[in-house]
Image: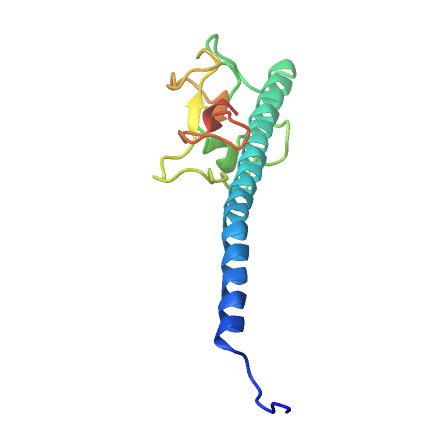
Length: 157
């Protein structure tokens, strides 16, 4: 006797749903790791971009000083006074025809949950300082208390 009924039985549907639930349970943690890894890459890129801009600013300061394009005070380190100076630009005498800008915008910290901005260190601060001396901007760091996938704190990057 041939059965001409078409469709799925309740047992087949149940088995298919169990298989999909197992797959979803395996994919969810992997997607969370992927999102965190993507944010970590963004953080590394942002730190590199800001630190490179700070270094270029300092190089231009040194060039302008050597070429007597600017008047330098004794306590001037050659680093920007604020992070926004990298966006606004700096006139280095006639070293460049126009004020030189180092960043189009200040990148955001992808782990900054409370919109605090970057942590800053001045030239006279210790390398691992978590408070800014306020003299200049020598380095930036993430203020996030989170831990990276490799076990390090984002503040140490």
